[in-house]
Image (cartoon, rainbow, N blue to C red):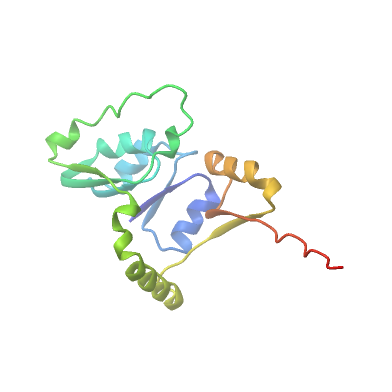
Length: 169
């Protein structure tokens, strides 16, 4: 399994803590060259939260019957004008690949099952998580911005402090 992240610390976490076979620092490395080196026989499955250059480079390296799951496109959320589609999309035809969107709400009926399985894996240490928690409602705008700059390290959360207790009498 190959992962992508922005920055050495995040890449190290993927390999050292999560056991990824390889990692690409999309901020410091040539994504296409690293994919070619790490996946010399091509790519079977790609789960995409980012879109943009990484998706385009993956499309160029698909194996026959490859599958791409589109779950997000954060690289384009702030685009003021629509971006052109990926240049390498025709490879889906050549490689008989499939690209499909994924929305977790489509599986709402299975949430209890998923929560039980995920909680069990977390308790067993088979699933690891990393949270980046900011505190205070006043930090909400800056915390949201961290998602788009890549300054967060893990799931970005904002904890709102409890309001002070009202005085009686």
